[in-house]
Image 1 (tube, one colour):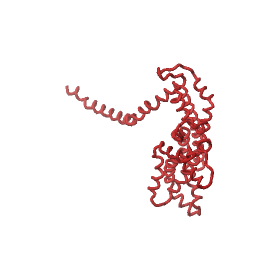
Image 2 (cartoon, rainbow, N blue to C red):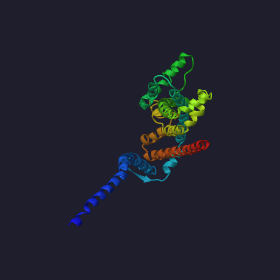
Image 3 (cartoon, rainbow, N blue to C red):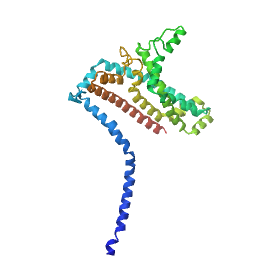
Length: 316
């Protein structure tokens, strides 16, 4: 009786050790599982479902469709409006991302100096980012009004002619790019500022002892040290810039991209196909075309990133 009851404590200890090992291995996955479950439900499943719809002539009433292959893709690519929207999207993206990056680096460099009320100024540059996009678009659309806008009124007071903000494609792109820059410059500034503060101060002190001025220190120490962060900012700006929607949608009271599609973007064209024409098959196809464009640009950025980091590591 005694010999048969002796192994029980050992079995309990073995099971407890096994349970502890399971807890150690499975607990991290259990803690992060809500994110992945939520991503599968609201992210991955809609993406896959959209891919299926893009190959169908979708009937919204019956919630079913007929398989048509790549017909929806061919139709979208054959439309002149698609190429106009693609050109406008890249134009607004370039007019916003390049000045935005230069301005963000300049502001971050100013905030990295030993100035008074640093916390106030650092939080101040983030205020436009936390503002509602619709509010920003409404304010700037009135600012760039053709007849009663503040800019044209000021130009008239100076004896200059008005700027056709809504009829001319170039000036409409400038106006929309200004809205984008107003919202996102502060966000990129804080990212670059965090990277600047990670640069060892001893590098600047050694450069100052060698006689390098502020400008020389900036281009010889700050900019090379910001390469990985700059690549990240460029990639995120590219993804966000190619999906611009709020600013062109609220630029006028109609939200159609202009009478002659002067500022029609890809996402605005997608919205018009889906909710204006009620053709979700074509809208899904256009969404996947946009995804492939962003993916291609992302791969190019990734290759540039690897080469930049590899060259930097070899130089060191």
